[in-house]
Picture 1 (cartoon, helix red, strand yellow):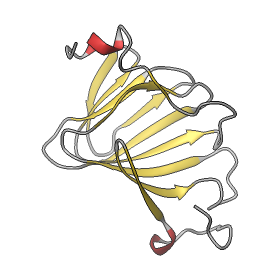
Picture 2: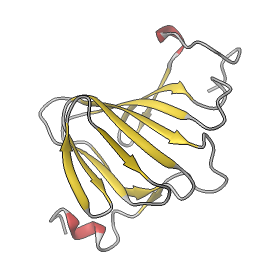
Picture 3: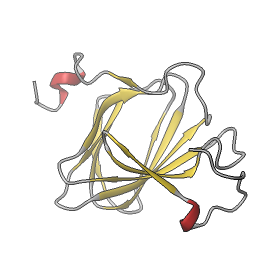
Picture 4: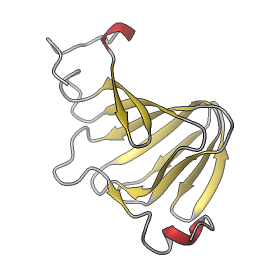
Length: 138
């Protein structure tokens, strides 16, 4: 993504969308779009049955804010079903996973900090124990 200029205001027309393994990702504040160095924000739309299985961000903390739908949200070995207006905070390096727990699209904001990781931004651990068996899916 290379916009023509760095934005202080990002209109709906300037938001870029990209597919991801977890759903449609809308870039609201990412390097190259805004000058934010400590904030990375995307709006995710996860289809029914979709998930971002257990993973961690070695250098970033994350805040998830549910806009619509229902999320089975795991932070470490604890889960809650979240709905519109609910938030989950994930500290740096903590394993977590988001699973669409409803019949409709799950739409949420993912805000991560800092905006750039020096190493891997996302490390998938969904095939490792105890995460592989935690939801009873082994």
